[in-house]
Length: 102
Picture (tube, rainbow, N blue to C red):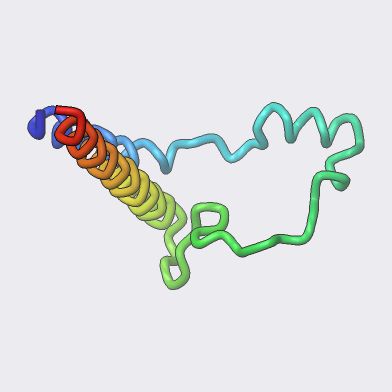
């Protein structure tokens, strides 16, 4: 099972590193429609907190492609760690509950 998780992580990291620089710079569909219909400004609100990697740019990294790759890598690893940690906690809880029942 750990081998499958590792392979999946490696594939996700490869995609983040090598394909993310080719992502479209155009706005997504909802943003485009809001702009076309003239209500894009209504969706702009004061930020509650600032994004850790706004617009996939990293401070100090001047090359846009490298910054996007690194941002994708960091995001992939953070999401993986959160999902893996949550899975670990749920498994531990499930094992504890099954011991209590038995």
